[in-house]
Amino acid sequence: MNQTTYIIGAIFILFAITMITRIFPFIFGNLLKNSTAVQTLGEYLPASIMVLLVLYEINIKSITTAPYGIPACLGLIIVTLVHLWKRNIIFSITAGTVSYMLFIHIL
Amino acid sequence: MKQELNRALQLSSPIFFAYFPLGMVFGILACHLGMSWQIATLMSVLVYAGSVQFVALSIILSHGSYFSLIFAALFIAMRNCFYGLHLLERFNTRWPLKLFLIFGLVDATYALLVTHPSTESGKDKLFCFFLTLFIYLYWVLGSLFGAIFSQWLPQFPGLKFVLPAFFMVLVIEIYLKTSSLKRFIIPIIAAIAAYFISPNNFLLIAIVLSIGLILLTNYRKVLAK
Image: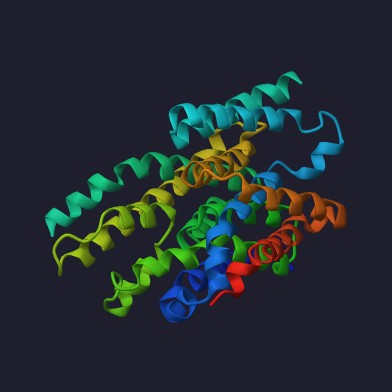
C-alpha cells in the first residue's frame, strides 16, 4: 500500500471512529445510563487513559537508554508545577515544552 | 439570532486561545512528519479530535497497522460516549443539525454547554449550533494555518513534547476535580505490566489491563443492582 493511500485510509477510519463514539450515546443512551459497569468505567477510565497517553507519548522505551527519560520527567514536573500555579492550559504546555527543548539540548 | 451568535462568540473566545494554537501545533507536526498541508487539514476537518489526531500521528509515523490505530482511537475517543449522555434532550432536533452538534461535541464544547444551560426554549438550538461551529473553526483554521506555515518554520527538536504536556494537564485537571490519587495507581500498574509484556503494543495492552483492573477493584459497585 502506498503511503498516501495508507494515510487517507487512516483518516477515514478515524473519522468513522470519532463519529461512532460521539453518536453512540444518542442511540443507546438509555441502555448505557442503566449499566453499572459503564458508569464505573465512565468514572475511572478517563484518568487511566490520560496517564497512559502521557507515558505513551514520552515513549516509555526511551527510559532504558541515555538520558533515561530525565528530560521528559523534568518537563512533566514543570508542566505540573506551572499548571498548579496558573491553571492556564496553553501557558502550562508552553512552559513545559520550552523547558523540555532546553533539557534535551543541555543533557 | 444575532444575540445567540454574540453569546456563542463571547463564550467560545477563550477556547480560541487553546484550540487555535493547538491546531497549529498539529498542522506543524503533521507536515514536519511528512504529510502534505492538504492531508493534515483534511484530518482536522474530518476527524476533529485533538488527542486522537496526535496519537494517530505517532502510530501512522511508525507505520502501525489499521488495527492498532482503530483500537487506540476507539479508547481515546470513548470518553465522548459519556459526554453525549448529558445532552440527550438538549440535542433533540432535526437530524442534519443534530448530526453536526454530535460531530462537534469535543471536550471544550461539552464543558461550555454543560456549564451554560439553555436560556429560552426555541433559540437554544441556534446557540448550540454557533458554539459548536466556532470551536470547530478554531481547530480547523489553526491546523490549516500551522500546516501552511510549517514550510517556513524550522524543525524544533522537542516540539513533540506538547503532546505529553497536553495530556499531563488533563491528568492534573482530573486530579483537581476528583482529588483522589487512587484512580492514577491503576494505569501505572497497567503501564508497568504492559511494558514487560510487550513494549511494542504498550498502549493497547495497558488500556485493556486498566479496564480489567477498574472493573475488578470496583466489583462490588459493578455487581450491585
